Length: 378
Image (cartoon, helix red, strand yellow):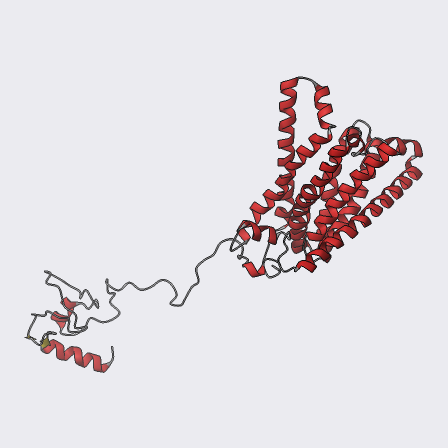
């Protein structure tokens, strides 16, 4: 306490003056001599309710209690006396204007980048298998099941299950967005026209169409070279026998008509290409590139993409290890090559999926159309 304040308090002790001008003497205090606030008429009141002055000590000793004696009405703060921002949990939210270029934000890590797509893949196959089990349970006829699986219209129907590849990553990325509406979720995954004018959108479509043609030649060349090398090392007969049975398109087009081919081509462009690219490039590659680097992200994504697409083929030859190896390489290497191409396009187009989706969907559609033409007219 400074000297001036001590003098004022001492004066008030000698003759306490109420706020309405009434002079009070002795212990008849209605107002605190220190802060001047009214003292409530409470028996044995020891401390001023406003400033915490020890009234009892003041009356007895005619001086203010020393400051080292703790005042029960004044609780010292245990927290620092400066602004502490509120604690926020989870990743920093991405604003709307940062969605197409979220380089300053942490996105999903390696585990999520691989685990979420694999979870979506398992969920899709679980639902498909559930339908097949119901069919077997109700019909008790394996031939019906075989005919159903080889029916192109069933393939068209089951292709809609791949929409799970969009639903799962879209739901997952919500926590990274300040405004998690559907447009922003798809935008964060790269499936957006935001920032493009009409000419820009047309340019992406043309790039996609051009690379779809490139992909056809790429897969044809890679498949030819793979088969040639395997024939050199493993023998011509076994490789050609396996290659004639590992095509996953031939058994579809064998019972297909023109209408089913048209519908299947539309499904390939609108559903298959879109859903798989959102999952593998828009989610998996995007996350892996940020956690492992551009090259590792591209290669790991291509590897997983290819493995998933050849699982159905290699399970047909589990009883013969050599045939299994040949069938695996004949299927895996072309898939790996086209997946590398799709990953490169995605990287080149600054993580926008427009061109990539067109390339994937049109390539799948052209593959089925050409296979149908060759099977039926040559």
